[in-house]
Length: 481
Image (cartoon, rainbow, N blue to C red; front, side):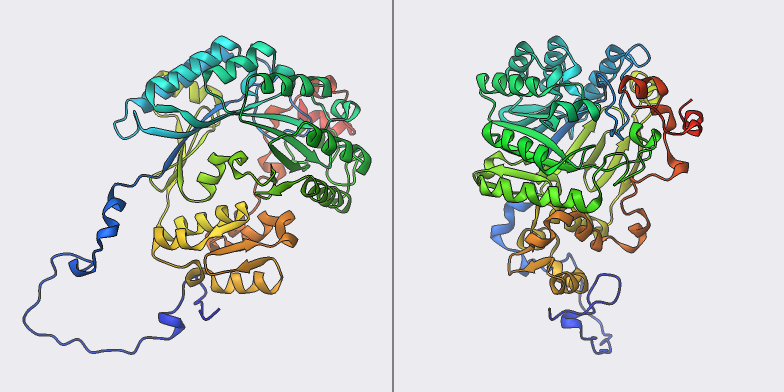
């Protein structure tokens, strides 16, 4: 590539050559008033001082009708134990707290996202109140991308109309499969009939984008059932399709019941799941879809249907303010996260205190690594935009890693971009992990929790039995108890 690395991700001087020592001429004279020299300033850079990154808002709503057997998120299914009204009261207060901050209140918002959990477990009145609270505190125009996650069985004609009325433009539904028998076996609460109803209601209300999620490799999936699900999405002319790959995490109902990983209890093996993944790529591309990230496909090559908030954050152009328990934020080159404990979150917010539990101010090296790692997840990393932001070409920092990926056929390099190859798209996160800084290598894919890290309180026997899943070993009952 023409660059050499000194082992810490940075090149050794210009073109890798050591600079010759030059003795300083120590004499009277000279005064440095500023730096860089005034003569190097350019008129076309005037507006750069006033530029602000695009700004997104995320609100976490962690309630679900019931826990899916493969779910590893911290969600609440018993509202009597974790009352939604009290939680929403705290979220509204947190929104107001941020709205009162001069650097945030009234700031123009480019994207909004309701995530969970299942945001559509809220009723129509609660959805309206939440949206109004955001609009009272931030500048949210009618043209923002506004996403709400949903589960088809929580939707009704009235609720879908309400979502569109409050400003939602992108309705995202967790479907996973269109086979009713597989939906039941995998602990889903809805039927395929509800998917068709929900899509019809969304069309009636002119949602610009509908996103449906599939999951490759659920229990008892076959190439035939998988093909039928893909074809159903294509026939519905869905604008954006997401495909997530089945994993068994150690804090899930499946793991607690003895389904410890691929090839166990009807879960496809790694090889079988990989075949399903490439089957989906071939079928969707044949129907006119284009892959826009490691898990996303956009209809008819219309990038207006892509997920804007994700692209803003991963592409380095956006900041994100998260609200709600365990929500994540990225502002002013600082990553921070709210406490993940419901009681602590509600208690702190209601006392007028910040619910932020942990954070990290990124140095320049960490900022650049973050942008490369997340930016490549969109399959194309913009070298020119990166250089404009940081003053470095990405090859100045990562020549060795890029060289190796190119030799392995996983990455292509052009003057303006790094592009994930077709061969590597199914493994984009593995490719991105090559760019981790040394101090973070031990945390790669840390969501695969160790036994010591299990959050056992999120699992109980009653929830298992509700799904018809019985623990395979008596010893598991002690874990669940």
